[in-house]
Structures are given as structure tokens and as C-alpha cells.
Image (cartoon, rainbow, N blue to C red; front, side, top):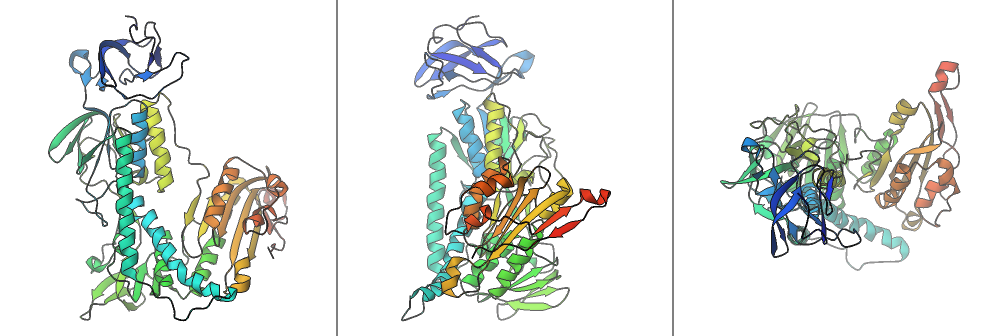
Length: 567
């Protein structure tokens, strides 16, 4: 069979095949093609490399791809007696968070017929409520940072006095106004996400999706068939199983409180615990943080861990290290008593920020044979595919690197692999991240400990300095910066910072680290003056040189040199 009729206007591509007025290499199927409002019956459509994926793309006379209103119903060779089987969709994504929306939009751009199912919006997630936009947009990164902005103003008011500002009355904060405006922004954002799906011609099915079989998803009692299923439901905050755990709140509730507490106990030493500690402390709440470990931020660079703890303690946040909660008692006056293995603390609220778990319960995964790990995370291969060929998973539900930009990357890679004829593995090398404490943290690459284990010989450059703004404000602020270099190659393999605007600074330097730039290249770059960022291209003398490889030849284990200072 030959491609005729539309051959002058389009090349039909699928998998590893392309038909341009010639016989298909991988095989041809007669199928109705819908182009705009016009139907072209009996147009040859090719299968893909696996013999199951169909897509049609319009090309102009010069062979340049042109996006048009083009959809082809999904078909598979898995039908009875070898005949092709139709599905309602090429892809159904369960969960309209950042990763699910990204995968759906890109799959649609590749010509797939796509739907996303998501539960109705509510500020606090539950088995019946979620919202288009997912955790990051609705009850994570975005609302949290809006509250961080709000909590920074008292510091700015205090700083302004050194620059000549005075106030006849002290500024007052209204918590309800902050929460009302935050919720209004969330409603706007969920509308934006819905609009993005609509413009991408992705169907939105409202309700909780459940997998019935390898090619069927059920929403509100109605079943939809699909060639591929993507699970992108994210994770949920967890509370340890201790007496009185029903009296605790999580980050979901903390972002939607009707009143700001005068005192709060926060359990946890990770980034969520520290970010909320900074938010509440900045707005005037007495904050106590209970950390099971001897330090905060397990997994971060050791010097960053020590530096941020000291900075937060200087702001009045009280840390209880080495204490684990054993119970939460509700008192007659409406307050709560957090009981630990070392004592008790009474406060208006007790918040747990001790971790999140993959949201995989009641999705039908076990029934269709999808493998889960001990924590309930979906096991996937390097292309985000589960052990069931038609089912994929991305984002926090896989418990790989639980960051929104990572889920976006995984969603894009999934769409390219399944529908774009471009098998793509997510690239997890040198992923930058930030902790929006006060001051914030920016980090990319290896910690010092990881670098020594990986490379052996490492040069470490550090600088602690007083930012220029603090010279007039008089506030006891410090900034810390650290560069880690593989001594054998001179490549910068890690950067860790804590101070004002460090996440903004780090985003650009993360590109340099991933590109494999050397310390010599950093040193040859002219800095922008006066900025804190210029310190990263002016640190010339190593604070210490670690020579682990030299131990075998009797060389020095470590050499020290004084740290540099910006001013």
C-alpha cells in the first residue's frame, strides 16, 4: 500500500517509521485520520517501532513539522485475533500535578489523544479533594513561598532603620489577609493550569482515577480505555503512629490556618520543618523545633547544616535536638502538650514535618500487578515505565528525587519516549535545589563528604562574610559560600550557599557545574561588583585540600588555608 492523497501535505511518522509517498517500512494500517474538521478515511497510518503506537504529523513542502489540530484514535495490535484495537485515549494521566500536566501537554503536542483525571480543588488534600496544579502549586512550593515573602517583611522593616527610615507606629500584620490573598492566588493558578490543558487539547476528567486493568481507568463509575496510563499522583504528608496523632497538623493545614498561633511546636529537621519554622518565627510566633538527629537537614553539606542552625537560633527559634515525640495530649484550655522521650512542651499547635509518603493507596496498582517498594512507591525503570508495559509513573509517587522540576523533567521524558519517537531518560546529574529558610539555602552537586568519597582528592573553598546590606542595618547577618573541586580534573563538582538571594544566584551557577566548568574557568570570570555572587569567582585560596588518595602513598591527608572574605 502506498501513501497518497495527503502525501503532498504530510509525512506520517510513528516509532521508527516514516512514510512520505512510499511504502511503510514497519507496516501500514488503514485508519480514519481527522485533520481539523475534515476526515480522510482509509489514510495509511504507520505503527511504531513496537508495532502499537500511531501518530500522524503534518509537514510542509520543505519537510518542516507544522502543529495542526490533528488527533488519531489510539490503536494496538493487542486486539483479538491480531486485529487492531481502539482505545478512547492514547494516554490517561492520573493526577494533574506539575509532572502529569507536563507529560499530558507534551504528549498532545506529539499528536496523542490525552486525558487527565484530577479531583476537585481544596486547600487541604484528602481522598476526595486535590486540584489541578498538584501539591507544588496548591499546598507546597508556591503557597509556602508566598508565606515566606510575608514573613520577611519584619526583617526588612528592622533593616530599614539603619538606612534612615522610621515609623510613627509599629507595622501590624493580619494573618487572615495573607491567607485570603494566598487562596485567591491558588484559585487563579488552578485556572491557569486548566487553561493550559484546554489549549493543549487535553481532556480534563474531574474525579478520582482508579486503574481497572492495564488499559482501563475508572472515574466516578465510568470507565475509559487507553493505550498508556501515567500515574502522577504525588505524595501526602504523614504523621507517625503515636497516641494523639489526630491532634497534629501537617504542612497542608499550616498553609490554611484561620489564625496564626502564638506558639507552635514543629517536629522534624528537614527542609519543610525549617521553612515553616522561619515563616512562623518571622511573623511573631514562638517556635520550638524537635529534631530526632543531632543536626538539621540530613543529607546536606555539613557546614551548611551547622550554618543554618546557627542562623535560625539567632532569630529566636528554639531547637530540641535528640528528642523524639511519643504522644500529643490535648488540654482543657485548647492547647496541646507535645510529649517526647526527654520532656514536654505546651503550645497552641503541634505540626509534624517528618516526611511524605507516595500517594498510591486505592489506585488499583496492586490488582493489576504494578510493583511497589516497601514505602509504597512505584518501582520504575530508567524511562519511568513500570513492570506493566502500558503503565508509567513519574514524580513523588516514585520516590526518586522529590522535587517539582524533577517531576517536570520526568514528564517531558515520558512523553518523548512514549509518543515523540525519542526515547529519553531523565537526567539526575547535578540537580540544583533550594531551601527557603531565612536566610535561604542554595545547593547543587556533591557535598564535601560525598566528593571525598567519590573523587578522593578534593579542594574546598569557603567564605563567610557579612553582606553589604547588613553593614548599615546593623543586624547580625552572615552569608556562607562553599565551592568543592575535584583536584584531579579541576572541575567544580559542588556549590553550597546560605544567605540572601542564594537560590537566585545558584540557578545560574548550576548550569556551569553541570556543564563541567573548571575552577580555573570560574577564576577567569570577571565578577559583578558589588554583589554577593562575585564571591564565587573570587575565592582563590583553598580553605583545605583533602588528599584521600595520598594516604596510600604516605602524603598529607589534609592541608588548611585561611578562608577568604568579601569585604
